[in-house]
Image 1 (cartoon, rainbow, N blue to C red):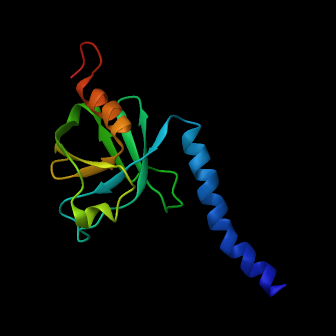
Image 2: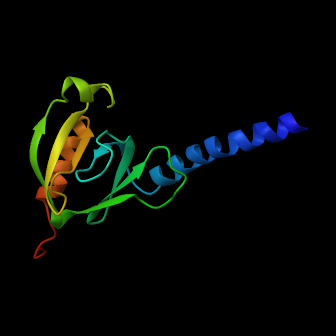
Image 3: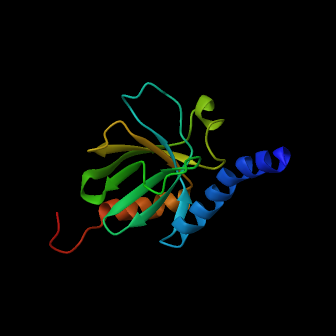
Length: 134
């Protein structure tokens, strides 16, 4: 009985992470996207996923039980400053094949890492805007 209860307690968060990922994917394309923010105590990368939603890019931690995005990037406040390959120390913390995107605008100093295909979509998204919008 105790072993079964322990197994259930350990499996519930894992099952929830799977259900959460499917829930996110059902509401738009989800892609792997790591985040590094300036001005935080942690200098490392945080693994995450992102999805485009209207005028926002929502970023979620991979290992979180929350259904809310941790960071929201608004299109009119986000600019791509520079794209580079990961430095040797960064590459171990990121998904294989990801490039680092340094942001400007309201998210100055923030970096996102994603694969080149997603970078193309992200760059297009930041450059595009609603007709007559900001």
